[in-house]
Length: 206
Image 1 (cartoon, rainbow, N blue to C red):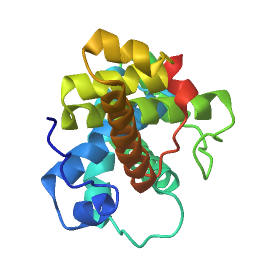
Image 2: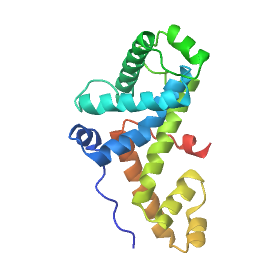
Image 3: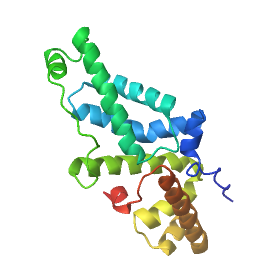
Image 4: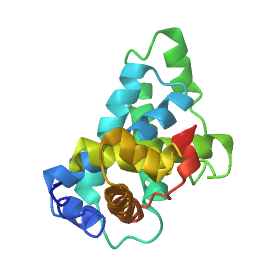
């Protein structure tokens, strides 16, 4: 029989980050880190500089995290990213560093005027960001379930297989498959809400 998942982070994840909880900080970086990296790459930064900037962003996030902040976390994260990018630009103007040769130096001479908010969620870039966030968050929860429980959930909810078919393949009762589906889906949707990420099944089937 599968053990019950550990206490969900969704109700306390950001509060635990504020309290310095290492596991909660790791979860936030694991889910949101690739988005910050993607933002940096979209602005023309090299891989190394994008990685370095991502670390700067999350150091700032964890030093100044406010669980009672107003607005969405992604928007605040974007403002931190914009601020750290601007700071790096100013440092680079005073003391040039290697950012990938001439192209990197030219970037810091012509640093773009970034928007006040991240890409709109309905734009192609915004949709790509939302999909990456969802995939990263969902896969971060996989280890909290036994493999056959996760497989039952994934095959029924994501792959769209009939529960009776999944039950036969996994040597489970149909009732157990329904239970696995319900447990996983409930935890995932609760966790996503706590991480300010919307559930969208289509992002996981593409």
